[in-house]
Image (cartoon, rainbow, N blue to C red):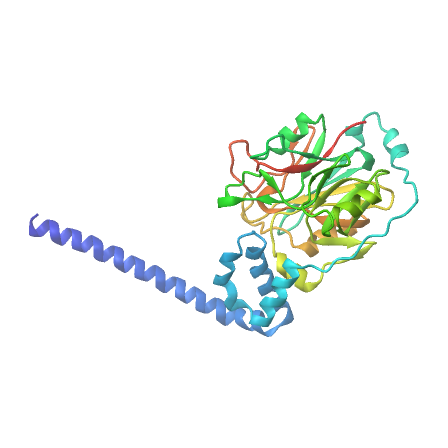
Length: 349
């Protein structure tokens, strides 16, 4: 190699090094500007504290808490411990079980078909887009599960195989290696009165479920308690959003879950089932960070829900009606949506 060639390579390396150094200096300047401009807000106000909690919670709720250590500087030990406890052990209450018969069947019968009776609204905000699906007849809402024991199925397949017309994703699953295979269900899962998952039948878990008459309940229940109550469909997840008409999302709970694509299910006083999903994580819309749990609770309040609970979110969040995918899921798979262990679907009588 001659001297000219060596000099040219040296000059190229030097330019790259100077460029890299300039980039680092720009980053450092921007970071210092952020600290100077935002430090007083982030560390000197209650709003700033809540914002820091939401930042940490956004990572915590991805089910990969090992990455939270990189954000621990945002919170003191006591603040983080309280946040983690709110995420791991949310405070729960049991919804009241009424003896009133809802008028859902009469309402649904007024429409020519179940599909036409289902209302779908779009709610646009600066931080997320939400799809709200309202099903008049709660007795048409069922839990269905993957036909495979080793992997889940796309929501579109779960709907087609069960002759359903609409649905959303439901519970969580064991995800070894983070592959999103959706094979092994987590928590309690009851479908058409049959227990498909649950572990210790006497151990209470946070669930949302439907009684035989279509009333939706939520609370800490064991499998045996649910069966005794006559629950026919149920899935474990959380946290609770609305219980007995009361918003259950505290500041710590809100912070513990951060912002993300969300899925949740609830019921209005008239028996109508409300299913809500949102986009997020800047996956498709680069301005949409996602919804917080308080955002979800406010949406259910807007739709007059008396009880509502969050389901699995993130890349699992999916909603379909009449074969149409209503929001693009925040995931990349061959079928365009995550493989799910189970789903809430609407099946005509």
